[in-house]
Length: 319
Image (tube, rainbow, N blue to C red; front, side, top):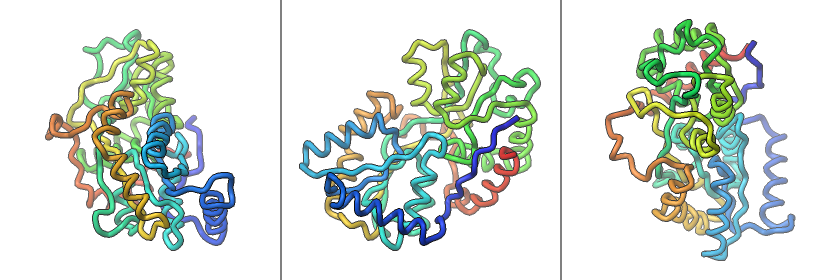
């Protein structure tokens, strides 16, 4: 039976509770704690990759950075909720996103500066990961639609499609296939006893251990288990693949505007992008090599359909 986490909607939590929380954080980050911050960043990029780069920025500029990270299970959504709730009294100066869709949604909600508020850099991808001890590559289905077939019953793993890159991928697939095909597929995954897990790294490790044969995950999570020697590979990029750039955004009304601009320039710079590619957090620096070979979402339509898509996914996957 699929477990039931509490869904976290991408909408502000009611005040005054969150306002109190924001004030506490503001005090901690700007002087009442052991360390005064010159710039505050909310970082959805994995801490293991982000923290060394933020320390490098401190060393190069002399500016002190306070970073707030999210959790694997609700990737990006928790920080997005927080940014929305803090709009009237911003705590963060910079948002370092690890996927494009949530950044676009926050921009549409007026969270970022109206002019040149955010930019994308580098990319990773949504990939099909396979345990090569259990599945011969010629037997892997050519389309995600085939994962609802009987042969894959109880052998497919995915993260909850309510959060993070999995949610964005599902939304883009709905647009690509059409609502009827997409909803039948999503219901088919549940009926076919797919494992629905708390994050893409959990998916990658489950496939690596052979507890699932095939899974949907992110390329950086695949790289981790591959580097550990797991018998896994990923299918090539194709028309059902979603590319996922990092983003960096300047929060409207941020308390440390000048330092925020310097941090944004640093994070989107060639040296940082190259380093993220080198450590496996990103697959590539530019999108030109994959142009036209992957999903090409209409982002305005995805945003317009978001509430309906989320409600449908909750009805299907949350029991």
